[in-house]
Length: 338
Image (cartoon, rainbow, N blue to C red):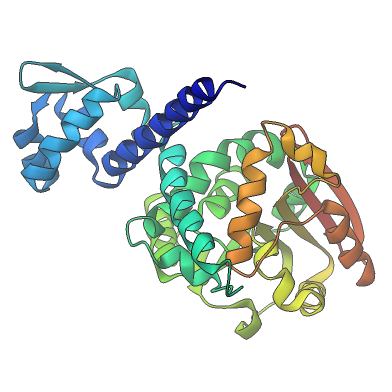
C-alpha cells in the first residue's frame, strides 16, 4: 500500500484517539453533564458551574468544539448530539469508550516499560491513574449492564431458582455493585453480598445500594477472596469478568473455595470474555480489542480464558456445567452446579 495512504489512515486513527482523550476530560470533569444542565454557557461560566479552573476549561471548550462535541455561537457553547451522548447518565452513553481509551493508553505505556524486565506489577496498575479508577466500575456497567439485564439474566434459570428461596448471592469482584443491583431489581427475594479489593468500588456500591433502596438486602465489603470467610454458604456465587484475575494466582484453590462455599445444589455463575481457540479469530473486528485486553491483563498478572478451561476446572470439583454464549460468541457465561 502507498505510504501516503498509510500515513493518512494513521493520522485519522490518531485523531480518533485525540477525540476520545478530549471526551475523557469532559466526562471526568463533569463538563458534559454540567453544560447539559446549563443548556448553554460561556467557558468561564461553565468552569464556575463545574467548580473547575477557567484556564483549563476555556481550552477544553475549544478542543471539544474542534472535535464536534460542542457548538458555539460567539463565546457561548452548547452540546452537540455527540456531546450529549458522552454524558455518563445518557441513555446508551458513549462514556465507556472515552474511559477505555485513556486506560488503554496507560496500559500501553506500562507494557512498553516492562518489556525488558518481564515484571508484572499486578492489579495495582489500575489505581495508578487517580482519574481513571473511579470510572472503572461505571465503565463496565454502561458497557455490559444492558446485556446482563436484557439478555443474560433471562437466559440463566439459576437466578430465578435462587430468588424463589430467598437465597444469598455472593458477587466476587463486585466493582461498583451494578451486577447485584440489577439482580435485586429483577429478583425481589434474593439477598446479595459483594466483595471487592478496591475501597473506591465498595464506596460506590454502598452509595448505589442506598440510592436504589436496597439497604438490608445488599451489603458490600472490601477484601480478598483468599482472606475472606463467608458466614453462611451461598446459594449462588457470581464472578462477573473477574475469574481471570485470580486464575494464575491459585486456580485449584479458587475452584475448591467456590465448591466448598456453595450450598448443595448451589450455583457458580462465571461471566468471562471468551478467548478464542484459534488465533485467526482475533482478526475479526469484534475481537481485536480482546487481544489488547489480554496484553493488559498480563501486566496485572492475568490472562484471558477459554470457556473450555473453566469447564474443566469445575469438572475437577465434580460440578455439572453448562456454557451460554452471547455477543457473537465473544462473551461466555459458565454455570456450574454443586
